[in-house]
Length: 398
Image (cartoon, rainbow, N blue to C red):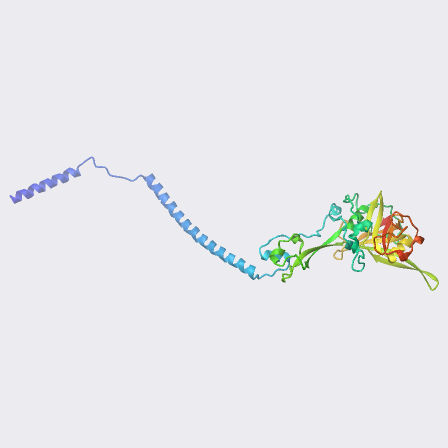
């Protein structure tokens, strides 16, 4: 009985195995090659992105470290710079205020020289008086109250014609000739470097060289460098801020760019003989145009120059610019050492006025508009001279 059961089970199992193995409906899965290819591509791209992200993370960390290091170095340089400041611009730059220096005396080309250099003459009395000739009339206000030459005038027009185009007919000489009237002869004329055009000469006489400097003050001003770096006109400062705990302000001064000299003749008696000697003086004379004529103006104290101009009726004036840094001898079209002009002028007794010791009150009969003669002057009554000379010629340096 037991054997029969075992046989039956064996036959049953074999039948089941046979039936399963012979089933024609069985399906076997096979992957799509296109899908596998896309899947592999995405896997590769993801790996590359992961690698790139890791690299960028590392780079970002390095940049953050470098930025922190540079910030520390900048702060250290501000507090203790290894490169010391050498001018005001670098002083301000070190503390974080950055601006460019603007040269107040930058060269300008010939076309706009007159426009940029023809500045209005100051009405401050120091524009015609200095340490050697102090103004004795402080109680009378500024120069426009007592000096006719300093009244406000309209802005000058731009010069017309070239600077060497003469306003007056020029004397002619053969080389080596001697001429006492003009004081110069032929080949010695510096014509290419001479302002023979009266309008151009006027422009140059008024041209100014600008000076900016630190001035210690008792009231106002700034004490700290941070304040100094914010001042108006800071861009023109070259000298370092003193930064010594004292108060300073920026002082602006102007100087003429050329020297102005006046030659007259001293005439006197010595041992019973008439003697004549040259008299050379330096004053800041001006030039003006009235109804097509040109005049030299100056306001000076009584002295040899005033006395000689009144008594002799004439003067020779020179305007001279010298640049020792230049190689060429003369010329206006090129950088050169010697430039200027000479002026021959006669005293205009109607436009000239003589003033008393107060520099304000006209001497009776000798004021502006009163035509007088040299012999009318009592010099003991004169304290100052408001002189006007009519220009007869503007000739080259020589």
